[in-house]
Every structure is written in structure tokens, then in C-alpha cells.
Image (tube, rainbow, N blue to C red):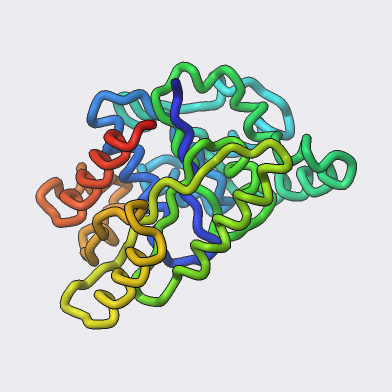
Length: 253
């Protein structure tokens, strides 16, 4: 059964796209068939893999074009549904749709993906840094939610907000559950970072993964249009994301 994972955090600067891209490619390197869906109007996930931004998301949801003709091969075993600034029009379209039928508007992405996701082992959805109607669509389409949390600040409250949102979406048929809390930008030399990590572990227990350590190679890789596994497979960022990939693979219910 296809596992659909929404990578979401309403806060910016948490390493969300970095996590979505490296998780998706890392899974593909393990032989998993993966679809990476870019829901951000900036098209950051597309650019991070060296692809031009495109209006594929707009065509999927607004023009109702079928998914198989919209995806592009990003890497071996890794396909991508790209976005660009037309995504703002998608949000407006969903907003109008929601005024007429909220349930239909919230399930638009899930219906558009439909049975096409059966071609994949994983669908990884990179959400925008906002709890907007597209992010809500991702949370409705997904069965699992992965929340990257920067340990530069105390973000447990923001992660709690996602749990409350998931609970609220159950009334609309949502089935997603918070499965992974991923600490990012971690520097174990800093007392504050260790304190925040401990706070997250107390709050979310086994949902908290091993942290993704601060690493300049992770910041450089998107500018080269590469995942960390391509850019520097020996970097600690590659080691940390390999560990996350194993955790996700082992976390299948």
C-alpha cells in the first residue's frame, strides 16, 4: 500500500523542503518508487533537484489534467509534480470552492492523486510554510505527517498545533496521524539546543527522530540542484538523512 507522507510545518526556516527532498531521494536510492509533490508556490523542492518550476500542480487541480502526464522523472525511482507561482491561483480556486463545499475543497488533492498513487511506494508532499488550504489538502490526502522542527527555538507548541489540526480534520474524513517529529539545525555543543531537544522528547516521546545536525553542505546542496546524497555523500547531513530514511522505512505500520 502506498504511504503518503506530508512534510509540514507552518513555521518557516525549519528545513522542511530540505527534509522533503532528501527523504524522497533517500527513499528512491533504496529502490522505493517515490513521487515528490511540491505544494509551495516558490517551487523550492523543484529547484533543489535542479528542475525548472512548472504549473503542474495548477494543471492537476484546476485544469483537472491526469497525474501521469504531469509528473517528470527527477531521479531514478523518483518522480516529481512541480509547482510555480500559479499555485497562488490554486489557493484562490480552492478558497472559492470551499465557500460552496468545504469537504470537496479539502479533498481536492487527494481526489486528484486518486488511484494514480498506486504506481508508487511513497508519496512525499512538501507543504508551504503556512497552514493554508493547500496544506490542509496535504494533511487530508496523507496518512502520515512528518514535522521538521528547528531547535533554534522552542517549537513544541507549533507541533501541538498540527496535532490539533489533524484532530479537527477527522470530522472531514482526515486519517493522517503525526508519525515523525524531526529536529533540525541541531548543534549538540549548544546548551539551548540540547534543552530544546529534551523538551521535544518529553512532549512527543518516540515520535522524535534522531536530529539532523547543522551542516553547511546541506545548505549548499540545493544551490547545486542536488540532494545531499549527490552533493556530498560523506557529509554528516547525508548520514543524518540516511538515518531518517531508515527510520521511515522501519516505521511502516
